[in-house]
Image (tube, rainbow, N blue to C red):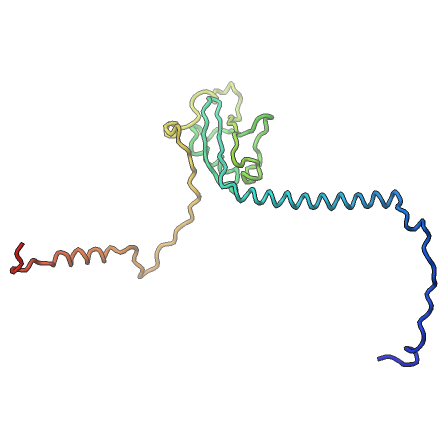
Length: 205
């Protein structure tokens, strides 16, 4: 809704002024701003491509082969899933070491770098598709812990075999009442039926 008298008034004349040539000239500040914007856009695009390639590579990696090398030149090899935490290696060692109560640490080399963050997964730690880590007791060499066998005899007997740790088992729920597992009664009924089959007297073989 509007008033006719006001709407019929001619619009005010726009000043016919043109910008000077200096307005269209590219200053050094404008140039650096454009270059910075272009560089940032290129960086963002490169990062997205890199993230997409990384995600595609992760889907192809299905296992992490970890080799733990001991001072006595024995190597323990185990296979894990890339999404599992590095803590799984420490959990495995606690079951196969001859003296799991002694303090120890794992490290990569070269350069020597102790593994301290065991919460990160194998992919984040750079241990995919495989890695070699080194074992060492966190004790002075004069203590004598570095001498003798590091692995249990049962584990040493598995030379040449790959060790695959068992996945964490979820507790199974007991079957509900009234539900029978398997079909043993059916088998028993069939056996009973087979026993009841009697050869007729008139049948001659």
